[in-house]
Image (tube, rainbow, N blue to C red; front, side, top):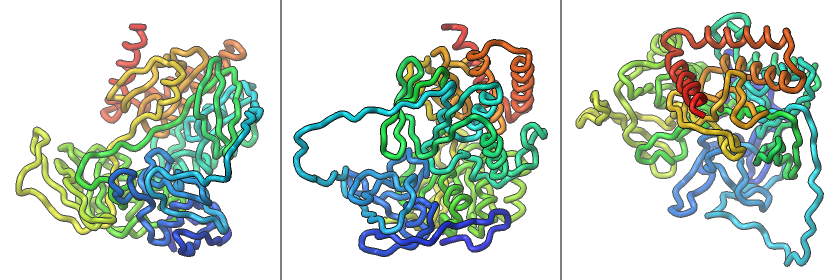
Length: 477
């Protein structure tokens, strides 16, 4: 299940290690997660649901879906898609909610002191938006701390092997994996502290964060906070959609492009937007058979240049089609697709059974805006931006003074837009700290102009509609 050769990526594996899984020895490499190592060993069932004991497997790869919760070294509910494999660790499938081991009765409890971290600007999320925000705030003189719950910084960039469009300023003709490296190189030369494996679990006024780092609670005290938490995969309702072998597109990219592990051999892609079509091409590059791409809409949503690539390689793109049912008991063993009429109803007799072992869902993203709601920022449901988002102004500042947003958490767009929004939020935070300057004002105007350029044309219509509604909602406050 491991990729031996890839036309673009040179997978640099860590030291070989071994761990125990349900009394079975699993070979792994340092630097890969428990769930990835299990998948490489052909193990797809990671857990079972608490109520009905249905099998659960790898789905999101970012710790949001709970499908990979397992018992690790006696501790239940460990997100194995996030935790790195270690030599000698003991991993078990847990039953139900899991139980902590009893080690005698605790008579006294003394609350330990909570260590504090202080900074000018705290950035939550080290993806394209968060890294860009940290760089631009630091370049203006701010001390910056950036936190990410993953073990690797870079967010979606570390999974993206395709070349970006746009201008040189937007990293045109540079692959996403290389853009991430460039941003990290810029970060290293600035007064920025980057902390991975660090989850911001709460916001407290004024601008204090509760942070869990390496199982330790810490307090972060900042003057400004930028939230760049990205987004999570949407789920689609169909029979057996919870079987192991049903993945979000981001999880497929993580397995394939980060860890060099094949998600399956024969794949059905659901969704013909840019992500679905790009991931389909990446699967073909890795040697996987893409049996078909189905799209419920009557037209393909992806750029023609991407769709044409997979069409030339013989992959059928079936518009006005959707998945009706996944087949299998313990894992995906097939899929039934069906044609839709103009009113989105299934057309009887149009069903087709496909021989696939994997189903990849690429049906959109939902902003990860929970911490913004908890912070008290005014939230609105704006469909054109992907769901519930925090209202914000042209400086990316929310209704909570000093709290900014950037990237997909502010509205679903491309990574190029996320980086520009990050730059804008970083500059605005620095401007709020140090005052207005001609340099910052010039940079902000250029970034806003760049965002407007990216949002031109038919593919930017949805975003333009969303930003227009954002302005209307802000005006009503």
